[in-house]
Amino acid sequence: MRVADAFREAYGTDPEGVWHAPGRVNLIGEHTDYNDGFVLPFAVPWGVTAAVSPRDDGVIRLASLQDGGRPRTLTGLDQATGWERYPAGVFWALGVTRGADIVIDGDVPKGAGLSSSAALELCVAIALNDLYALGHTPLELAKLSQKAENDFVGMPCGIMDQAASALSKEGHALFLDCRSLASRNIPLDLAAHGLTLLIINTGVHHELADGQYAKRRQDCENAAKRLGVPALRDVTDLAAALAQLSGDERKRVQHVVTENHRVEAVIGLLRAGAVLEIGAILNASHLSLRDQYEVSSPELDVAVESAIRGGARGARMTGGGFGGSAIALVAPEKAQAVREQTEAAYAARGWAAPTFLTATPAAGARRVI
Ligand code: GLA
Image (cartoon, rainbow, N blue to C red; front, side, top):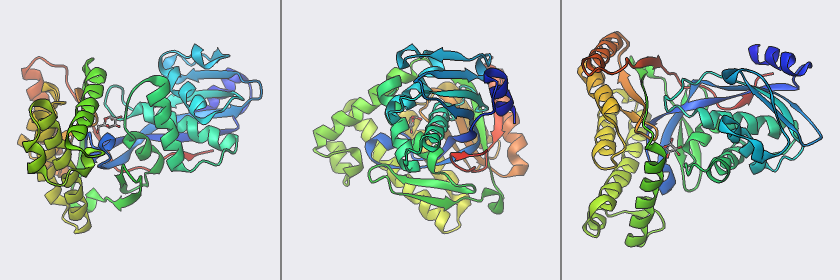
């Protein structure tokens, strides 16, 4: 295995073990997690693999094959910079002070919005949990990884990405109630229904994303306060709620409340075996994210419109927005037409070509050696 070879090269010994954690794509339930709502992501076949050995002296040695492969020695967590802040944050959140030797290898496509950061966090978290016998459950590791990202890295993300990386099961989507954190693995065999999930990576990441993400969270918190509910999850009468709100808050509430219902609708259709019918709900989700939540981008909108023109059953942006990827639910024989439509639409606007991936639901974080 490449990462184990690199470990031997970097540190001169075999690693104690190798762990893998996947990225995720979200089928539906966008910007609902931090509103105590519902999400339905699944783990993708790409992720982060880490070869790790324990230490006793508090030193962390870290190398990444995507960053030259040369180890850096950290004698304090505050020395971590760039991508190193994610593993450092996990040491902090788990309270691990003994250090470790780590080599990381990742294959989540960059800038695709497929949660490479959550994969990195969970991979390190599960490795430390095993090596130091910390006894955390996968859900606890997801929560601690989110804490690392919120409070150490400083990105106010919800729980979806970390939960998807920790709790997913091959061949299943993960239905998560982000309030109770109860979850269920829902069988998702798209091929059996003559479908595939095409990921259209716009290759674009608009810089405003992080500031806008925090701003959306704030809009939601303000609206919940105005409505006198603990979180937007608790809005039961949408019409009455909207009548009390105006401007951005009104639009955000319209999205969050309807998006939670769309997740439940998709769950119902999946349970009924009516998989084709979820396409229309994906389309509705996209329009809501574009017009009410205002987190789409021209590249995402064109990807979604082209996918539908090319014959997709449904399509929408996935993840935080402002770039990243769109997903399209499409019959395999139409996938080529979807690609061509999208490429032509991008070329006509002078944009760099998007890239395409096909995702089937993969397993969550695990020890591989
Ligand atoms: C990002 C965050 C998640 C979630 C999505 C939007 O991926 O990390 O917690 O809020 O955006 O659904």
